[in-house]
Figure 1 (cartoon, rainbow, N blue to C red):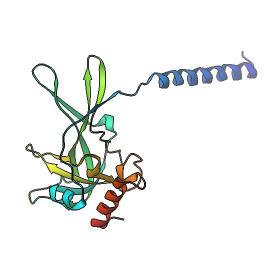
Figure 2: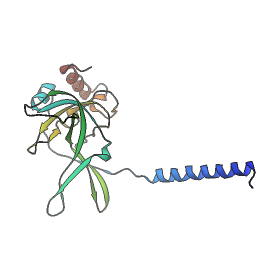
Figure 3: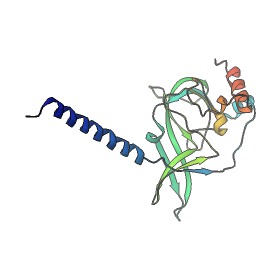
Length: 196
């Protein structure tokens, strides 16, 4: 029979081993390398231009973490990447502008396109990012400006200046940079749509 001090020593040893193994696992988790892709895109410099270009303007929140979203990649016949994007399911809080034929599902969810994606190749996974785009963060509220593509899907336009975080939880939101043109642009957008 073990005495109390021996039991404590064994319990402490087990706890230390569990902590040590947990730290080893955490340290071995490597972030997915990012590949920045430069692309030509049309940009809009005022809220009025952005409004005119958008088919759909809404306030919504992503329902899943980025890695749990639907990442799409298409390839040419020679196995080079043709296109990539992420389908992000969002919970719509409010529709500000929409085409006449726009309808939400009963649960007010819609999948939108973001210009970022995960591709898995022989060398491992890579995160492909168009023009330094920052993906929407889970359960953060945003005003979003979207255009409809030929397949009927809606995608964010104007890159990082086509979506603005409303609950100030997304530190990477372009409008959170103090005393910048991006901050003024965000303020002008929020004023135009009377969003506090």
